Length: 613
Ligand code: M6R
Image (cartoon, rainbow, N blue to C red):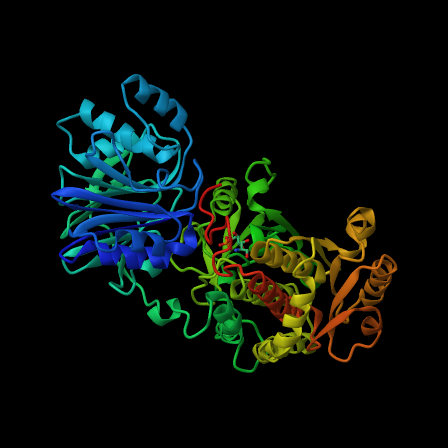
């Protein structure tokens, strides 16, 4: 949440900062701002998207070779010009951008007010920059990097910050704790960013500071150390290979549409090299580490948030039934605070597209402290969760920029299924025939997803029917339940229509009260062991005049008789259902939101990467 960008070097900072902010905008788009130093500080900030800021600053002379920029997802204080970053200290000497939450800001603010400091915004960030200034005044002989380290030792909460000091015009200071920062090194220049994708077109030489690091940059030097002290050192540089073209819409009207269409390729990439040449074995050397003796792992606990949690629920159904290992799927945000009983016989698996979700990181840290092995299924290489894990299965989905998760979900499901086959095999639970059947099914999935795109017009017609509904239910059973949850999440986050996902049998325990002639009910009703039961649930909805939309297997007859709209997806093995069924559900959310005139890439109130708890 919030994107931060910094530049110092020999080029004009302003255009680089604006470009970087556009790349980072998916992290938050309540407001945007920049500060550039060239003798004096030029600060421009505006509520709204980066384009609004750009328009506002156009015609101004914003020159200088050092600057910082921020795109905000509001935590403390409403989205407004005043609450936008950068924030200045009272004297105007320091400018700061910040991603995170300062938890003890009220105490600091009270103390600073007693010292005579005045605040113009409601933010915790303005408190932080004035606290830096107050420590600076108390310690006038110390270097700015030292002052910031000293001050941060008293600060609780999470932050990724960059500070620009009017009296040190050749230095940028950054620090991170619980929020991400990467540094890019060019020739006589450095970039600071919340993620690599915002700077990779300028440099592929990347430094990943550790949590708790302070970084001091001049245009030719970088020094890092832990904020608690110790020696400054020159950090290691890693060379990344991210493709810049993947960061563009590539002719599509939105990133979401592009990412839906990417899925056949991203799933194929996720499978690449992970099934042996005969199509008969899963090759996941990442997992060998955890399972020298399969029976030593007594339980697998999945921790995740949002869409990634839905992939975890799917893992629960699949691994228990196929591999016979106990599995728990947990919301990371609950797990981290409920004092869970875990030990060295547990394997904790974190699922995260970004690898930066604050609650998932905290859940992993807790599990690690308690001795559990940590595996992650992640999309973004170099992000925090893989760095905390003993091994990572990368999703290989390519950058996902639309806020709504699409290709991340289907590759997560793909990676979970590969993992399950690996485990079931180790447990001796799969016959050769069954394994071949599953792997053959997986290899056919990219093509089946491509076929599912043909449903687009049909789904668009259903979107017209549901777009004015006050509430929509999504129901499924077994593996169809996490799919129903995902369908509901996708629809509500993009269309802002109230939507709930439930196990279909739970409907009678409450949600059925929502059903009347205006309530669409989306059933995941493909052929499977609970198909008959789903038909009964449909009857119950029909008896209450609900509008039935059924996702069914091609050739279905009986659900068709009950449903108002049937969307036929290719018949697949149950374990593959979430991948193929996700496509019409993604399209349904996309079309409904588009008909309502919403921005599908940047839906209101949301941000792609939830880096605050
Ligand atoms: O990056 P992560 O997978 O850890 O993100 C978790 C959720 O914030 C995310 O899946 C969110 O629910 C989706 N953007 C919803 O489409």
